[in-house]
Image (cartoon, rainbow, N blue to C red; front, side):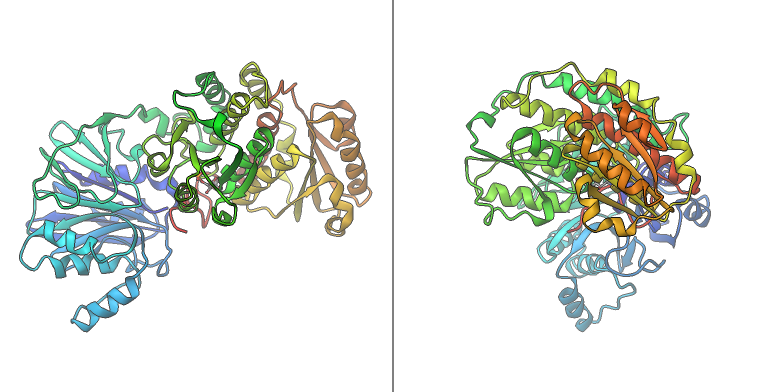
Length: 571
Ligand code: M6R
């Protein structure tokens, strides 16, 4: 989604654009920067790439910046709708949504304010101007926070406060960084690690003033600014850059064995204070890939999985004997946060499975189980999925539904090299791809289908192996690729039947399975290693690779697919 970055640092315009580039992975359609130069606020913004913005900005000297990548939600993609938005003494960048912007705007217009953009965000600059008439920046911010509804992370430059960038937030993340003689901030820690590892994640309702030498914070109602203890992020620059890889997605797929192994080993026993044994039932929620992890987790933990945006704690009769596992790589997905809040409001025991320490989800949860994936930059969730499965396997063990196994390191390492046969398949232009599986393999198909759609823009149908003959078979032609995933011997006969049904309609068939009989029946086959209890974690890898290669053959950028963002912080 949108990204924010900025500095209070000598001659920091280049640093700002470099750091903004580290946020490109979140997805964006326009970008902009504002800086203070000779006492004036200068705004430069444009539709399109950060490289283009860099050319437009040129080389200017400034010690104070705010910058933004926008992923349009309110107002079309255009230069005027790009952030920063400036009005009077203020310029702002904003992540989130101001839900009451229409009435605020109408009111401000009645009072003579002239708006330039069609965004919800611009009202923030106007409110700051309105509330700061006495030259008090803090009062202006409080005035604004008291009026806007919805969610926000805002960075603001103020002409009459030329040594600080102001930050305020509710519901959207903001991280402040501190270095030797400079301060910086971003919506995401990876943007800062080239500059500092000392970070503080702002709390909802907090205001910060970031200067070169001093960073002050105010909680609601406080008049005196205070200091905060900054922690140390374990992210390194090599975690957040591609190194020798052409794409983040390939790098992150290659990191699957080590990260799943590390995560599984880290949770041999439940954390202190684990209340799982007291729960009478389990509900697992998530969106997209995290929902697919929830589906597998539900089957492991004898619970129920539900898409976060469909979750209704009241209707589902959540109570203090209900464990709710909220799964989210980013810990910032709005739909998942809403479900988590809803579950908490009914007394549910909220367990967060997330990759981002200090994310909004961790603040809501009774128990936080961190996946140890390291930064996942590619928009496609790959290594985060397998680490989520590792934690869900551990929860099933703690609940007595699964026996501990050796870590998934060996089968995952082995599967990485067995998918090469799919490279040929990826070269062809298919009109439709069917993914067929039974039981838990069906979930692997759902996740593989999501990858093929989002990264390679391929039309996919995911179907239970036994269901294809009940209708979807009508779509199968010689231009159809059918991928059959089978990791369960009991599903073999059903999968063989489905395979012959599609073969007799001239489809091309690729098989992903450890079973010879099925592999021999396909036109292409990925022979899976013995999954040793990790069949679903192993089975997804060839599909992730198929999606990646398909994208690359189509000359698409798998790291930044169109219309999508890494973390979806709007409902
Ligand atoms: O950060 P989250 O895990 O909460 O994100 C949820 C989904 O938006 C995410 O998994 C999405 O489906 C991925 N891009 C899929 O690759």
